Length: 508
Image (cartoon, rainbow, N blue to C red; front, side):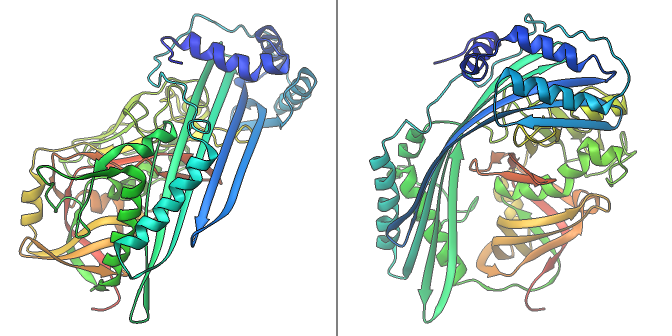
């Protein structure tokens, strides 16, 4: 099914979440009015249903298969800086009446007792297809895919001693009605496939990992993609003119083996202040953590962000334009509306080095005298929305990435990151590189292990001296955890040169 208007999308989700539980919109309006009978700034009722399935294989055996259906709703009332949230895993009129009564307790004063939903309020429908991720392949084919990945990984190199693979698919629908008259709904089908391998040589073992995901059906993993060389280095290895092709699920297994073999021959990393060149795509997680979290409005409002009171000031190199956008095509963090019903949009956070704005949910926007930016996100119906990133990326420049790589006389070429942490209040960060190489005189020489990047986010942004024209995004696997809530996010960037940053290693 394809949606041409937001009303069509709302109608389907309404059927699944309300009518299927013998609730109609008129009753929702009545409950919103009851919620408004207490003096509150605003409130909402959020319904959600999630269906998910997962399969895992470990060392040639299918070790786990699970299927679950989870649904419920939450009622939220906001009065100033106070928020009340009541929720239920049963969707019926009685439970809704009780949770509304509980949420009203945030205020002891009488309110208007009116709330009218405006059905004419539409929004752009960017994600138009309602896929069936779980039912798009049979159970036998899903298990067969994992077994093939195991066999294929072992066939690539005799040093592969263990293979683990996992396949998950889920379908999430939500509908939200606000006391300001908003009625909105969205869908979020998702598929994800991962492979982890262990290789061993002369008693030394190393791990390799690769994964991919998308808002789609499982046929996505059956698509043909170019075969990559086992010596492939992102942004370095040239593409073949007429590449051989293989199924995406096999390419994921191949990349996991390649990554493990890279780690097997990696040398200990040296430490010091070095030039670092970041490959395009997933390394943007550094900007996500070091910059993005500090631009989420709750931290700014609570004075726990290094970017507080810096609107209009220079916080980065003039080559840096950082954007958060919920409308990136096929973006991991893309959607039609956020979990408060605000349409997805593009927000320029830093423009040519100048800080231009923050990311807001409804509550923080109200408290800060700003407008919501489509960043109000929640993990589940029993969670309050908080400002979160969507797809955060560094805009491309004009430089050929090959010229950026040739510019480094001595330094590190970082292809992938395992994770990191940042203190938004100070801007200090530390990141672990999972795939990185030593560079000398513009050439990539050999892989290193145990390398970290450490610094201050504003200082690091000002070290950007070259920005490539090769913007790319992650493989659809980004997850971000904040205040215990995990949501899907996208990260993107072109090849970038940082003139000087502290590299931690195992030897000096």
